[in-house]
Image (cartoon, rainbow, N blue to C red):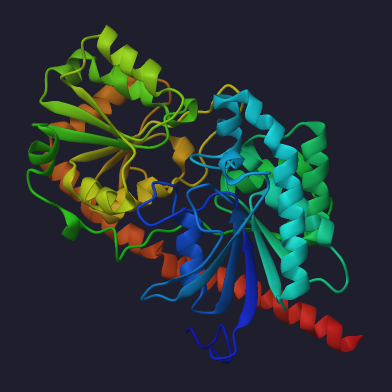
Length: 429
């Protein structure tokens, strides 16, 4: 199967991946999905990942694992390393909202990315470029749409599709669509949203847009990571553990989950809520918990490493992601946390906005912003171990289909087709 993707794995083509979210160091709490995809793609390509610099990260490194190896280049965009704070932790737009003065760094980040891509294309023989997110990576990459430059594809992953649809950004997206070879979207609903925004005017243009979901490292996330009494021994939490993992922003819906914990139907059980993550809403959420005397039912743990998350997923009883559409239109893409929880054998309660579930097979789906219905769904699982087991077992099997190994095969086919088409056109000229 692998050999059909690359005729000779000892003569791999060079692939440049650009992104704005990437772990900065071992044990970092930053999302891992670009890292995981790049590592599994290294089976088929020589991978270089280009991401923004951070004061706590090396500017250049080669990361080697049992899966493969990738080269990471972090480009500078500010006069001093200490000033390079726009991209981490979290993401660019939330970072600006947290401290508006950071918007002054945005033009320098765009310039830094432009210069870094230009340098990479000049110094390396890349066969293709995969830009993750339309903004800023896709927007800058399309500026290098020239006959002698490698072809590129863009991966739309979330708020770059749901948000940023003002006239200027919409115009940029249309330009990207014309110049890119492929656009990969993580869900069908996102593809339909993109259609409605850019209004592709012919079948050929529509065929550029393909759906490939996010994935999960099922070798790392597994029911085998379960530790009995983990929450009792480490956090003094007894009872049925409901786990929520995510950055504490509006779209994650943590407020509605906290409110569900004070609903009588759930309050009268032994359920405890553990929240892992940090973000701009943490202080207000903690104050909300205190206001309703829920400190003995809700615990905030802050950031933790992905190593710890493996155990936390597998050792909880229920995983809950009550995602909503934020007032500014921001929402989750294809939520990888759900896949990781499913791979860990845990039942899920979520909303339709996460898009990563099989309704009534791996998860219960509830109406967003409705704490009463959320409490009822959680109650059904808190009081029914057999149903938790059924959903959890189904989730393990479902997550196998979304392993990064399988997702990388799909990406590799798309990329190889782009490379071959480019080579064919070049040979005909």
